[in-house]
Length: 238
Image (cartoon, rainbow, N blue to C red; front, side, top):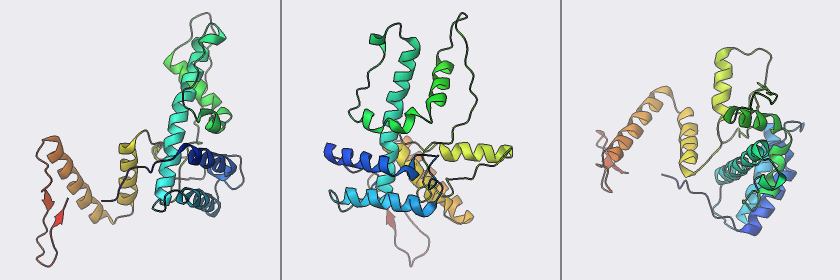
């Protein structure tokens, strides 16, 4: 199986990476004309990949996409803490100060388009008291980063009054933010399963579930293997 760990990013590389990402507005700014242009987004990811390969020649586009999602997720968590503390704080000194060193470098991706969404989430977590006005914002934010090469068909054209199933599918496809390496593995496996024929997908899912079952019951060992009944094919060690 392919290595799903993210490559190490030295601080100077991550600074350059974020600055180049900021310049690539087609990857994060919905107001950018190139936001929905597949070729423009692919070229932007290629530039980021080329930059990282100056430090690690083995890095792939998938590694770069995962890194983008990873750092966005970290900054988003810090941003939510800031917004939540602003709601609760009685004085400026009580407002949460982000501890993530690259927070200010990447906060541009959330401060404009996601303000309404973040505020609504804070209000849902901590309802205002009776003497405070209640703000309601039911806008569904589509500005979660998705990548056409990473999760197929992730970018959808927004049309008026879409069918309920379309709305549900869109929400699932936009929930691709990576919190840790296990989320990255899940996204990677899901992308591969989608590309398989239906009969192969069913078999692959069964084998994956069989392996997980053995792991959960502590019966999975280093010598566990998949055995095919075809004598021409060799056994595959897991």
